[in-house]
Image (tube, rainbow, N blue to C red; front, side, top):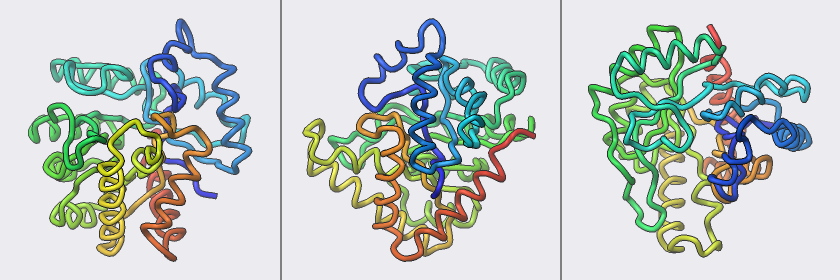
Length: 287
């Protein structure tokens, strides 16, 4: 069974506010153990967390070996204050503040750096990304600093232009990566970065009535087509469900993501995803 290369232990797939509140003033160990047991029962033995500011992923990494799970964590996502990510991560305004956050990840034993470079897909409007992305020059500086400290970089990023800037800066994985164009997909393949397209974040919205159904269907179909094209170009692709996001429950979300990726990749899905996960395991670990 493949692992899941993008989860958020702090979230529950239902309501992010209530989920985060569950872990105040401290991470809820009972919740964490219950989720780890769910993954164990599903045969999932590798998890890479996208991080949180509540200490939940750190607790999960500490106790995951009891469940036979290799658990990797960035401690917390890092975002520019005022841009997307404030609900779950830690913010900076100056590069000095950013460097201090990177140093904190090292002190706390984090495995890699998670950067929030753009907003989210607008699931009511295909082709639209919310918020304002970081500029290419800032992305280059952030990635260079992280690499200079020996960390791989996991990048939350959407929109062809911002994905392209992230790849040119040398990010090690692209998370979500919505709306890549042909040039962007070619750059992805040439870069050797791993793409974690999180199809379940759109696929599991179908039939819920929460968003425009036609827009959701178009978003999913487009992302699946891009995944197929990326694979044809030789890009590395890994399974990551974004478990904990709305309608993507822990454990089942991984299986949902696998089914959506298999539909996009066909008979070669197992080998492609295994290679992508192997690259994630190799790069995203403490140095």
